[in-house]
Image: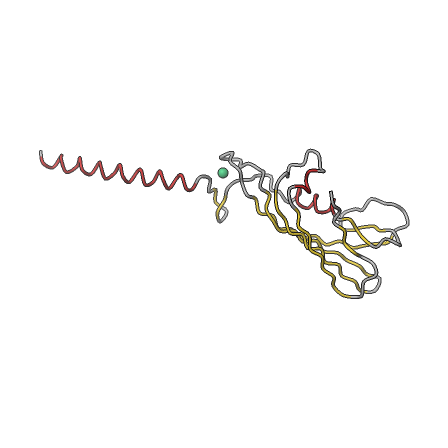
Length: 167
Ligand SMILES: [Zn+2]
């Protein structure tokens, strides 16, 4: 899988943006990944101010392989997340902890694959269902068809009402 590398060194003070597109292939490398299918736009913004380096990762997109908790049909789950990190130099090969990314003194790039994966995975809500303005909206289309059918039946009923009046 291709690495998504963000340049963090040899940059002038200011803001530097990089944009990546993430699709299904990205999740193939992660075993037991709940997310298998989706499309995301990842914007990595590196802010340099002398020694101070920060990175903001913004992810927008849709997870499309999950099923609705209520109707068990596929659901398109919109994802929109932003995380801010501080980049720190460290000579030891430490694991990056939340919000701080440790890099080697001579490191010029960061592979943000793991960050992207975690951000997408953690942003999936525990409960997923088809919704519209916060309301459950499973099978709204088929429900409206039922409504039509119901009103047809009502019309038939009213014909019988007419017959009743004849008596
Ligand atoms: Zn549903």
